[in-house]
Image 1 (cartoon, rainbow, N blue to C red):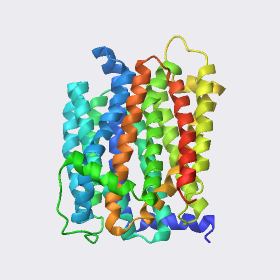
Image 2 (image 1 turned 180 degrees about the vertical axis):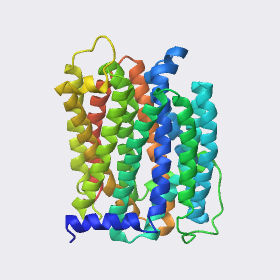
Image 3 (image 1 turned 90 degrees about the vertical axis):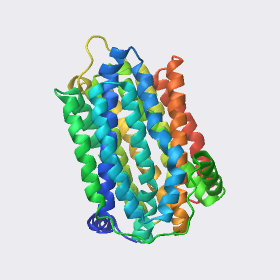
Image 4 (image 1 turned 120 degrees about the horizontal axis):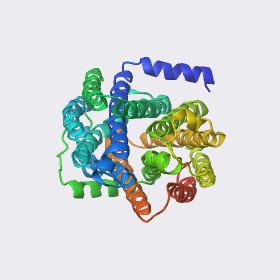
Length: 432
């Protein structure tokens, strides 16, 4: 049994490992670029383009989340096949090269000021990420020992949300500043190139199924993959838990710009601060989970974390309802933080995301450990499909509720109640 200090050394050792660091760097830079672009786009739409086009920024930004994750439904089954048939590090390099091309298109989209063009680039970004997804998680058991999986997943979740933290802050700050479009346009291409360079150092792995015949029927293959994987109880429940996490997280992160502006009466910098707090909380919770489990693959903390998420979400909704409406100019960060109630709201967001990190990390390790090397890419692809389905459904539901006149705090309350049901289902379905 390792103590906390030894656990920290193990995490540091993984970050120095030739078998883990290049993959981590490529993942980190890719996630940063995704969120840098998405944050810049959301701020641009919320505070500029929506007013110019006469659209509802809340609905547009919510639908944008669905546009980004739709490719995971369409292409994850094919991506899983490719990860089985070909060498996975090589596929990772190809996907990172494609990211450079997509980001070159993003430059044109930013300068055009067209919401439709930006949505098209967002879809292509999602497609690129869909092909990288099965690599990111299926390659870990090939490179690492079983007792390193929890730590590796904790680092990946921490890195993912740290990149969200940095990407969302940078995207919001850069695009709203002077010369923002030019700065963002340069950086998205540069970061994509850096991610491709990192992928060149990912160690080669054994090809799992070289004789596999590729099948490109998008809907048929996706349905067959999901049916095959979900039939296995040991895979189905971790996948459901992971997908539910992304639905809940998507509800929060997609609503922050509108929540900051219409509920809290705050400017774009406060929306960025909220995204930053949420992302930092996920990372902190992921590292805390690694120390709690000490390398053991167990989901015993997941249901309890889900209950904590619901309780804090209901508290957040209540605080938002009690908060008096702001009048006059939108609040800056400093004016926003002067209110003790606003500080409590930020603490709620941190708590929700902290328990989110404790919730999610064990589920990935359980999924990886319960699947054979031959099946893991397909299981991961199925997880991506289900993630996309849950996120698309949550985005569509949120958009419909907003269009029907519900306020964002009410959506948080509905999500909290549904999350309690999900916690009960996970408690009964996963060996904790």
